[in-house]
Length: 194
Image (tube, rainbow, N blue to C red):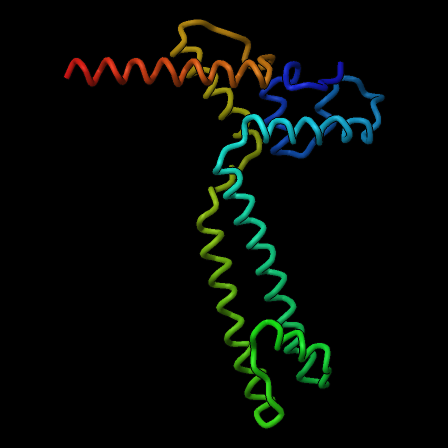
């Protein structure tokens, strides 16, 4: 069987694919070409993000994108400074000027040293952004056990059991709404009784 919709794809499998990038989990058949699975996965994942993605996911994406940009920028500046120590190059100098650095013929070596020192501030900025990212799960199996624990909690709150390994993505999120509604009702009752 090939899981080609969120209605069929088990939530546990979805989490495992996201965490491990093992797209072959979309099928229990051995002879399915990986290209076919990739064509199925990317639209599925886009649909998943669109339906169930949160503002946190967008924040994480934007932070990750900024971190990658800053890492590349720092690498370019470091390489440019190293290259300019050996030989002047107008294109490389222009790149540093475009980044906002000042480089003059009179203080050429001092300016290169200053640019190198100032660019180390980019590393601090990267560290600051990385600190804003959620801590990744150390062991990939923890992601699956984490979603299993969430489902166990849902089962307890809702008062009925279900198979954690076969529940689809759509059903999981429908149950999630029920759990949130039930918790809101309980919290409302608790505030009235106080």
